[in-house]
Length: 74
Image 1: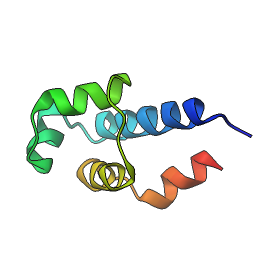
Image 2: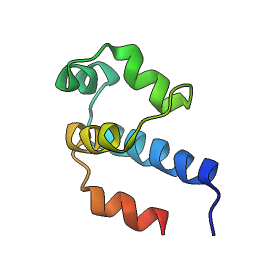
Image 3: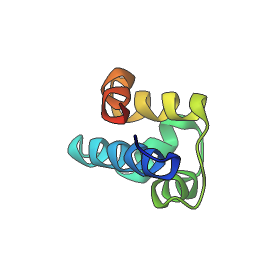
């Protein structure tokens, strides 16, 4: 079973990988969310934790099906 910190890392990495695969900049994601670019940077680096709703919003912004993310965590 994965530790919580490992699961958080998987979430961060999956969101970033998906963002990059879709050719999106942190700024693009931030604009879609109505947030500053630093918000996305801090989540991706692990400096800031994202809650459940924020993760769902990030998934939408980067074009990731949340089910795909959940599969990686199980």
